[in-house]
Length: 114
Length: 119
Image (cartoon, rainbow over all chains, first blue to last red; front, top):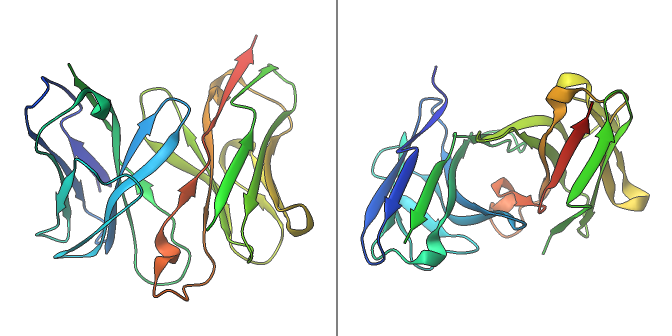
């Protein structure tokens, strides 16, 4: 049981390049989330999904797109990377059921945009 | 809208000393409350959570937290710090009700407190 995994772990992009971050979970969780973490800012929600085929905007969605074609995967895309998107990105998932929505986190992807 | 305030972005203690990390929330209805820990270059790991019942909650690694409704607080404590406790700690909340159709699965995080333990 791997939990939540993220690919890649590190990436360096040039301004204007695109990339996709992959998140996978093997816990059969309904809900999945993408956060970014910046020094002194805590974690901020980018996008989230409440089930396969559904996505919604979080607190800081601009410049990002997401897709949830399969229940176990949640992809985060950057169409045209900007230096302001230099950050550590975390994926998380949680189960649908009782109202105690504990989230399980992946190890993170460190992205640098030059 | 909910908010979470962690007092002190950096707390430094000596090994063996008491650890106290402060968290206050702003919500008309007491939310679900969580503390997460992040070790260097790792993801977040749940330390403990309060949902209902006993207001003193025990978590992993000897940490505990007490929910105080009158003070809208959920401070994290550990009687005796260990070098391995050095990490960043995040308080988080999620709403207890879902009047708007199911937003109680979203967490709002504080900005984090970096704990340093000195030998």
